[in-house]
Length: 53
Image (tube, rainbow, N blue to C red; front, side, top):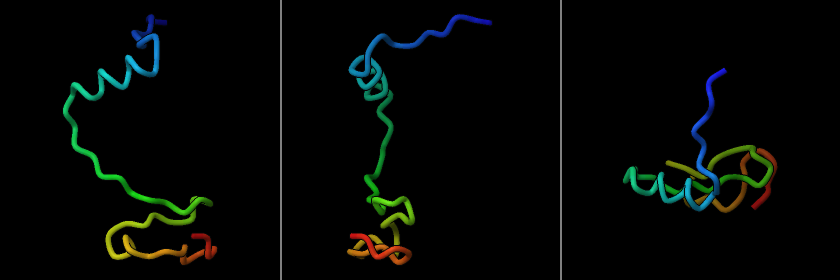
């Protein structure tokens, strides 16, 4: 099995990913993982499935 080249820490990994300059968009989610508050639901305050906020 080949050896993995894994960064030694979370901070090192984070800095390596940051250097890739990838765009991202923060998307809120239901705390029970029922739905994402995204697109048409980005301004919703309650989950449509379980009612959590």
